[in-house]
Length: 447
Image (cartoon, rainbow, N blue to C red; front, side, top):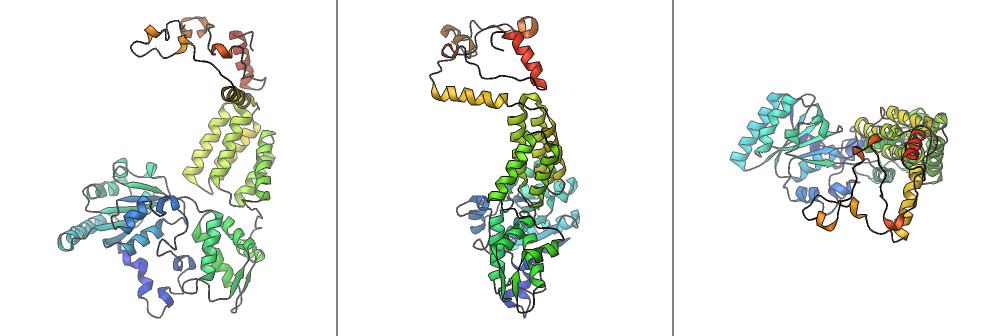
């Protein structure tokens, strides 16, 4: 069903509430930013001078879809637009709204444009829950400008939104908030006497604020909810927030894991070395430590992919395929389910035969390219597709390997100046054993 978007700001009209922030509202709702000065993070999208910020400030909003993890500011940005725009602003919730609600807003939009010369912006929360029929109804009105669409979704819009609709909107991807940004938000809430906890005489050290941020996993709403729950446990005259109190609330031991400190680097180092050392149990242990501490999923997945290429290499080329599938799966499904493809990739990499031959080979080749005059590309290997190449001798003596038995015939590939250079030395592990045998048959003097 359609809602008047002024419901976002209903608190401002509630008499008897300080600063328009009723105390029965959750802290996360009360502390929603109202201006860009209060908005934390997402500088790549709404920093000074950025396209979206300029459009909001100029009240020239294009159709948008905000895409990102929970608690990163999607609905908050919509609320800020509602407060800053001169347009008619309406809200739909994709779970409850039907096609009739869309048509009612379109009719209202036409009246607003005809009688008041006002645009209508419709905000659709959880737009990924709109079915194809509902999205198709929206399409012509977004296309002709009768509606300016702002959607919010935690799901990849390229999978969940019709391509026709996607082509008419601008995707704004919001990033998971960092621990430092969450700590800043927590401190704002503790200091704010109008909407936050500033009147409650609460103190909190950096250790507990950092622990809250880690548990929140980049979600400002979770961080503020935890802060509020801890504050509710204090006496009426205030007190200090502690890690012990946080552990009582979350029901589990808080991981002391500073993502910028020694513990962070020690854990990551042990994680990588356990995969390299073919110990899947140890690798899963350190993976669990990082997940429990709220480590960034992309950071973990990148380390698995690097290890698959650097330490497994061609001994089992499927390791990199599995690792990259885990990278994509993490981005697609998010936590808590992302722990499963991560565990699959980690145990595969740890259990695979190991070789660093490709890693050593490229570093040797780079050292030569950067430190030597390596000469020119041999004439017979140069591009011969353009008119006049043959007159320059380009490609004329090239021998096509597929014309020969075994699809191979020897010829020179390295530049003259680099004859005899040898970079890749496949080992005897896994698939590299087969590679070595094949290369020895081709180049018996080299392999």
